[in-house]
Image 1 (tube, rainbow, N blue to C red):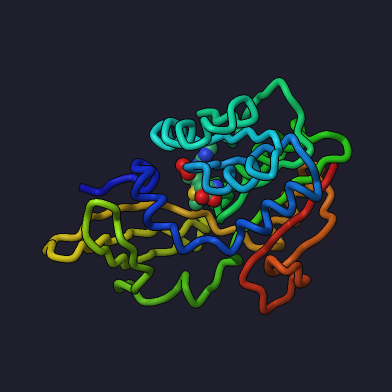
Image 2 (tube, rainbow, N blue to C red):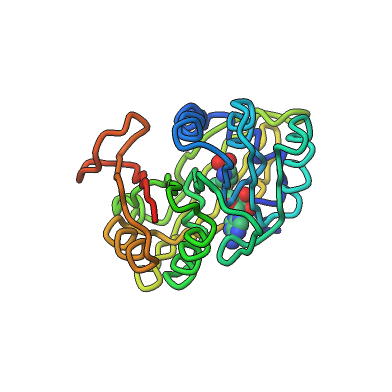
Length: 246
Ligand SMILES: C[S@@+](CC[C@H](N)C(=O)[O-])C[C@H]1O[C@@H](n2cnc3c(N)ncnc32)[C@H](O)[C@@H]1O
């Protein structure tokens, strides 16, 4: 059986304990740009926590019902300051504007075509205050990764609470026409012969396309960075971090 990678929030949190290098950056951005804060593709509340701990009002939109339920419990300690909504970031309608809107940890690549990216940007613009800031944090697609041989490659390993150590490997297949990378993850738990299989797709957006779609949506690019130290974007960059306004 092939499972959805975003169906089990406990597994997501256990598998992503390694991802900590964006936490301070996002928390500092919330301090710099101010609240209220809106996150799209909010997941299990990984990035909501540091924002709420700094005292900002936070709203997250997330499409996985299991993730929303789990995140609501995790964030309940923050009372009315924390709102987690089940919804689709491609088009959303909230009765509120936000000073800081962001999409982190490659979530923008879950918008599967340019039409969806544009409609997402238009929804963001509608919900941004006049002096508000919109931030995107995602990787820059690497042709060496996209076009590599179709075989299994090591991704990561982690300990799943209540279960054994797990080693994750992947096979990917990139469709040049749609610019969608089809990925299968194999979760090999110690002592188990058969791996658990997950699949997901990511729509590769290169910086030139990001520039064009942001501009088409009427958003103004204020800065482009290649890391959390705000090094300017270059041909060597692995991340594309966009800071935009209206
Ligand atoms: C890589 S995870 C990032 C989660 C969280 N932002 C973090 O940093 O840990 C991407 C998230 O986007 C969500 N997602 C994918 N498509 C979505 C959509 N159309 N609308 C809202 N959320 C979506 C997934 O369910 C998943 O939780």
